[in-house]
Image (cartoon, rainbow, N blue to C red; front, side):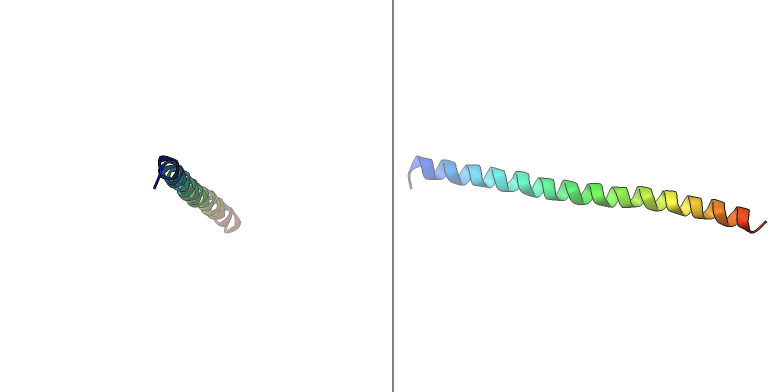
Length: 54
């Protein structure tokens, strides 16, 4: 195994970890967005239900 092959493997390893980090950051951002939107929708639903029952 020569040095250029080792460097290629290390570059591929780094690229793979950066790619997986992007995937997990995207999943985290998606789940956080869902939590924020759900909280907003539920609070608006409570506000609407309390005004419509009067």
